[in-house]
Image 1 (cartoon, rainbow, N blue to C red):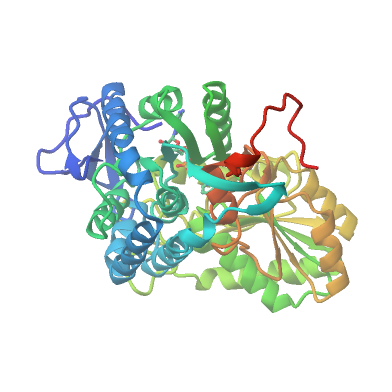
Image 2: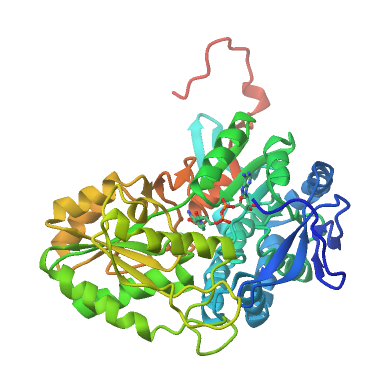
Length: 507
Ligand code: NAD
C-alpha cells in the first residue's frame, strides 16, 4: 500500500480530490499519497486518502440518490449513456494524456485502453433491451408469471493502477445503466482519470450523487467492505487483495466479484507460423511494459520450434523503442513506480541462480533521467519452481519454457495457480479445438495473444484469477448488478372466486 502519512509536500503540487454529490471535494482526513510522473520519476501531485467518515458520507450521498435514479426511465438512462459515449469519444485524446501522465503508458496504448472501455459504454446503451424479463402467459388458468431484474442499490468498484479508465468503465457503465448508484475507489497511483470520467458523466446528464469517487487506500476499501448500505463490490487487482476483498465482503453479506492476478501462457505448437508467433509474443509480453493482467508472461515452446522461436523473439527486442509515453516514437513506457521497477528487475537478476538463462537483459535500456524505465528482458529455460516462472512479475519480462509435447504444455498451463488468459498458436484446427476443450483457463485465444472478450461477452479468469462466480461486464455484468424477481399474477373474474385451502397447482 502507498504511504499514508502526509509527507512534506511542495505547496504548489496539484491535489487530487474526491468527487461527491457532483463536485470535487477536498478531503479533511489529513492523509494523502504522492502521485508520480513515472516518465520523469518526479512527484507530480498528491491524492487525498479518505477517512472512514468520508466513505460514510459518500455512501450516504449514493444511498440518497438511489430511489430517484432507479425510478428513472430506461430510455433516459440509455440516453445518458449515449451522450456519455459521445463525450468520451470526443475527449479520447484528453483522457489518454491523463493516463500517460500518471500511469506512463504510451499514448497509442492509452487510446487502446479507452477504446475497449468505450465498448462497455456502448453495450450499456442497450440497457432497455438488456433488462427485458420473461413472461409466461397462462402458467395456470388465469395466472401469468413474469420475471424482472432490479438494481441492487449502492454498489462499489475498487480498481487497479494498470487500467485507470478501462476497468472503471467495465464496472460503472453497466452498474449505472442498471439503476444502481456507484462509488468508485480508484487506484491511488493514478487517480485523475476517475475524476475526468465523473465530469463527463455529469455533462452527459447523470444526476449528481449517482456516481461518487472516493480517493483512498486500505481504509476506504475496508469501510466499503463493511458498510451496511453497500450491496455489492466489484474488485480488480492482485490475487492476495482480491481474495481478501472477496472473503471480507461476502462475510459481510455483500455480493462480490473479485478479479485477481495472472500468469498467462502462450503455447506455441511446432506447426505454428514462426514469425507470427514471435510478433504476437513480443506484442503481448511487452505492450504496456507488461503491466497488463492479460499480458503473455510465459511462452511454452513445444518441440523443435523452441530454438528458432527464442531467436526470433530475441532479435525483435533491440528494435523496441523504450521512452516517455508522450513521445510519438515510444512503444514502451516506464513502469508505475521505482519500487515496482526494481522488483521486476530483481527477477532478471535472480534468473541465472535459479538455472534459467537471461537471453536479453532489459536492465540496460539507455533511457536517460530518473524515470521508472526498464527495457524488455527475455529468459529461457524457465520452469515451475523458479520465481521467474511462478510469480506474477507484472513487467517487461518474458520467460520461455520448453515442452516436449502438447500434453506437457497443457499440464503446465493447467497446473498453474492462475487461470486468467491463455493463447495457443498453431495451424492445426483439430489441436486448437482439443485445447479449448482441455484447458482450465477462463479466456482462451486461438492465434490471438490477448483474448480480452468484446463487451457483449464477459471477462473473467478461473482459479486464483477470480473469486466469486460472476465474470465482469457483458451479460454477466448485468446479472451481477441486478437481482431477479418473479411475479405470479392473477386477475380473476370476481364472479368465479371461491375459498380453496389446497396448495396452488398449475394443472
Ligand atoms: P492491488 O491489488 O495492489 O490494488 C488494487 C486495488 O486494491 C487498489 O485500488 C488499491 O488501493 C487496493 N488495495 C491495495 N492493497 C490493499 C489492501 N491491503 N487492502 C485493501 N485494499 C487494497 O493491484 P494493483 O497493483 O493496483 O494492480 C495490479 C494487479 O491487478 C495485478 O496483479 C494484475 O494482474 C491485476 N489485474 C487483474 C485484472 C483482471 O482482470 N484479472 C485486470 C487488471 C489488473
